Length: 185
Image (cartoon, rainbow, N blue to C red; front, side, top):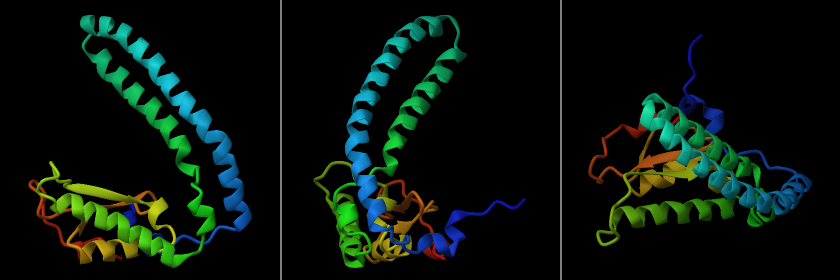
């Protein structure tokens, strides 16, 4: 079976379908209930895993391979809990569902923010790569993000548009050049 590369599928680069208003309102109401619980559970699990980690340090002193597996378990557990919040919606999302101009402005602000960080010599370390999450571009699609970013000097990286559009600043040290046309559908 041939593996399908996500950046070649044209449909994934298009805007997301507009959700019904009731669905957005229901998701926002569920977010109001669920997100505070998530904010309480994540630190509690992190604290428990920290205590368990103290004991695994003792075991790691005896066996070398155990520490790597433990760290992978901690990363996977905390990452899974953090991903639970990915379905949450913020207040602007139900209000601006289907508003293309709102999402264009949102993408423009995000790309401008990353461009400012990448070109600011006094800002410390410049980012070599960044990602614009789907939450920010769902109303205009990943193709619009790529076009807006390319216009400001960013290069497109292999990406899963259903999660985020990955970009690279070509002038940053350590950035490898790539042909952006190879990633756009």
